[in-house]
Image 1 (cartoon, rainbow, N blue to C red):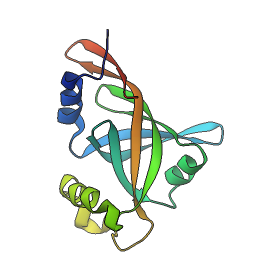
Image 2: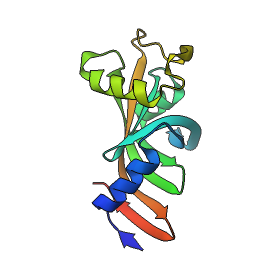
Image 3: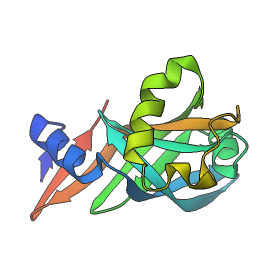
Length: 142
């Protein structure tokens, strides 16, 4: 077991999740967990998701920002935050990157950049467990 957030681990995470990746995202709905599959992209200790500000996940995160993710031999906890409208000028860099990352489905009618409620959700990771070629890495992102 290794406790790390080393460049080696960051490279593994980037290779595995630095593209359109399906993850399970769990939030808290009152006293019960709520989980759903989301398309996500990893960069520098956080996952980014395009969603709708009025979705249940965003409403749940507004009440309790704690979240958990799971996928491809990786589980983690993090804090969810709404980065605001996808169309906001301050989100231009994310918007351009997410357009490329999610190119396979971005323009199929699912994303409405003009809708002010289409937003970017960031899950800023706090801790996690990564398995890679028989090695367990306990991660601290704080």
